[in-house]
Image 1 (tube, rainbow, N blue to C red):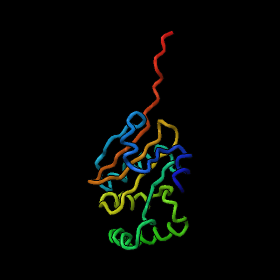
Image 2: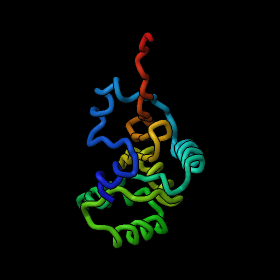
Image 3: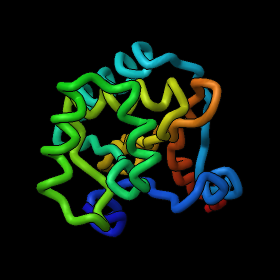
Image 4: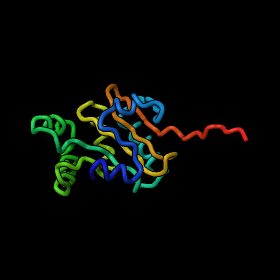
Length: 156
C-alpha cells in the first residue's frame, strides 16, 4: 500500500515526524514509553477495539540496503526472516505500508525497541478514532490524534 491509499482510508500520515509536531492546531500528541511487549499489548488493544481491518504498519525493511537488512535480521528469528521474505515477495518495492497482523506487530515492536528499524502504526477511520503511533528513540512512541473540530460559539 502507498501513503495515498492509506490516507484514503482515513489515516493520519506524515512524511516525517516534524509535520505532526509542527502542526499543533490540527494534531494532539502524547508520548508513551513502551518496551516491545508493552507496545504490542497497547497496539493490540487499540487494534481489537477498532477492528482488525483498520490497522496498518509502515515497514521500510524492503527499502534498506543489504548491509542494513543484515543488521536488522541479526535480531530476528529464522521464522521471522521467513515471514519477511514472504511478505516482501507479494509487494512492490515502493510500497511500504502493510495491513497489520500479529507477526508484523511483534517484529515491528521489537525493532522499534532495539532501535534497529523504526515503524509507525496507523489506525484508520473517523476523525475521533484515527491515530498514528510513531516509533521513536528510547522506546518512545509519539501518538498523534486529530484535534476534534470545535465549532465557534455564535450568539443568536
